[in-house]
Image 1: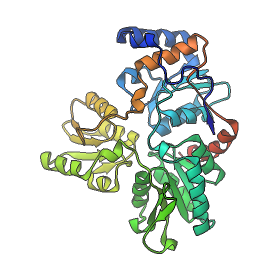
Image 2: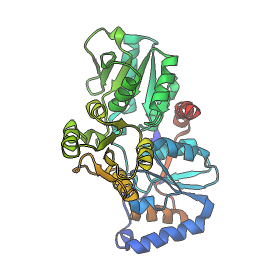
Image 3: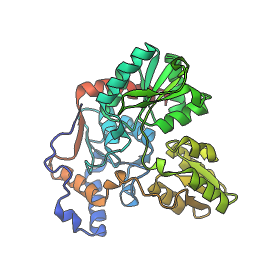
Image 4: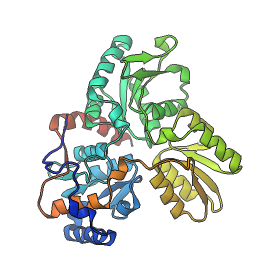
Length: 367
């Protein structure tokens, strides 16, 4: 299980931070960064707000931030600007004397919440009874430390959207079938890209505790957990049709957490890093509709004024849980450190860490 230590102020931003001006808060962050120097490390995910993103020492997608955490051995304090599972991963990949903080402990992930360890262990037991020792688990990093530990114990590995193909190819060298947790869309899109037909993919319903599949179970190659990203599932085939009708020469690029139908109807699909890099390399004057989180889309638009860029769905909201990490919470987390207080610390217990690292290390060795 994951434990969170010393949290007398869980989820409660002190009132004084609600009354500070943006200038005051930004100046305070700069002061503390200068005061702590190399003892402080602030990694930030691409989906963070600009008000936080501007202070990052490292930015990237889940894989890049996991690698940055694993490589950092100097910082004593790591203030992770992302969501809960990312901070857990950072804690497990860093040394025991390094402390990981999450500025707002309410910053979770709806997808990660769709798979708990009890459901997963029940599913594994039932699937083994059906398929025997022919299955290996692959777990998206958007999952709890407990799910990662389950994966490590059972010979599997973690994946990110950047390396899902490579990890799925590796998994098939180990076993005949893959149990992919918790994002059905990333699992389905990745498997299809590798040539596995939809007819060989089944869906595991964790609520009903049953396998949904029409046909002979022996034909199943991929078992997908019935989970999804609430942001990326918001992009629809209707959005694609509307863009195609309105902008005849616009390229559509989406994240593989989008539905199979949306991915197939798009021109390009790939990880957050892939989307960022593709837009950087795109020629001036080119037109793009991007299907991913709104904070990132707005940042890409601002960074490329020479291109016509829109969001695939104008009505999309940013990732609401990621957005809980705002400037007031960042200042609060940094002042907890400089004041010698204890709070907002993410600490995974040693047993969970040991098993989860098996899954994470298998990924990082191949990444």
